[in-house]
Image 1 (cartoon, rainbow, N blue to C red):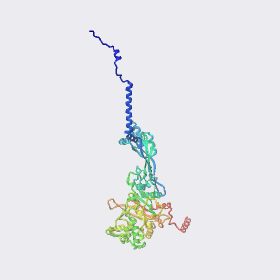
Image 2: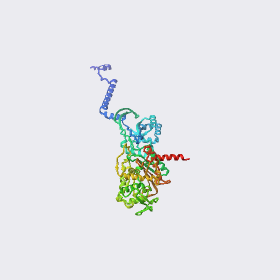
Image 3: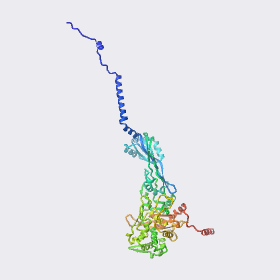
Image 4: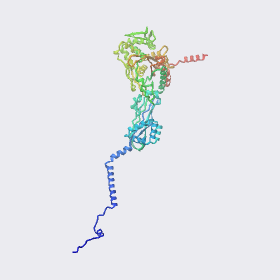
Length: 588
């Protein structure tokens, strides 16, 4: 049997056996692209729908900012509208710490230029930035001069921008420093009336939403969220002219007698307005001193025993009792009186004098005898009625009310010493306000705000008694009185001197350390103003109030009354003027 060999050529196999064709390159590429498109579409849907809020917030955090719209602080003016404190527009420099840190790493020289302009050591500035590298905002400099701000921006450093701000300026400098005080870097009152009136002066910033570029520059304002509300302007009772006169006169006396400090207050008797208040040492609020003690308004915060200036109230109490009149005799011989174990003496024995001369000669013995003849409550009553032991109502931050013990606790020696100003504590403003009551018998609250008409007060002294006391005080300034250097040509003035020993920090009186005082009013015929001067520890020459403080009264009000258009009440008569002219012609 012949076996047949089935053999097929390769070509036959290829032509007759079907094979699955491989994917072409085009098909593979289209598949990859289609899958990629599907992924992109899915990702887009995820971002646009599921993750939209998160991404939008992140984008806005890098571009959209809510920035404050600064509101300037109210202007403070004097009684006549002259500016005492104003807010001027300035710039603050801020930075994005991460961006600025990269500048320091990549361009150290540019970082050094920035530090030099800002007045900060390079190392310190870099350290501050590194400490805040996880933040997006930090101030580099606050309230700088526009020229400096422009120089900083001219550096062209990424991550630095400017923000509009306001800075407080005080045209009168240290002359009004202790009254006005100052504000901090955020324009909030820190001392003085800036603090006391902060609720009126402070502005309320607004806010707006803006888009900023990577350098912090505003590209577009989206919307205003709230409008800014500027602070209210405040017109003070201060007369800047009198303030300058008082500051200069007080400074001259403090320097002349090498004193530790000094204060002076001028009040309007009819309104209770503070027309001037000065204190030394002072400070310039445009560049606040590092010594906080200079910020203290001594006329408000410092208390002392007023010495012989209290004798006018002892005599007023005596006149009120009906037992005494201005011409009632008082025997002060032999110039000494013993109360308990203490001997009270006069510097110069006065002999037999009347009640009015007790004040004119400033007799301790006379005041003591009169006081001891009266019930303690009578003396205490008049002292409290004129305001001793209580606040003046000025509202000035840090004001103290002084101290006077209740008469029920007085011992005879306290009754006696109270009559000439020991055992009671007051401040300069309080003492001056008490004398203002003697102008018309009415006690008015003290105010630093301008008043356009007389202010009603409480009558605490009979007008006739007040009139008698003014005539008695006029004797102090006249011939034979202790304050002849307080005279003011053309005006009838009156007042009282005082020389008080200082109390030590641990009690007891200090050796050879005194307060020199004078309080006076003018014109006596129609009182307009009262001024109190206290000079602390004069160490060169005299230390009596009539020598140290009284001249400041004359120096200030001699020119001040004419500036205020107060009519003279002590001009010579026509006949006297004619005789004076004839005498001048007859002189060779």
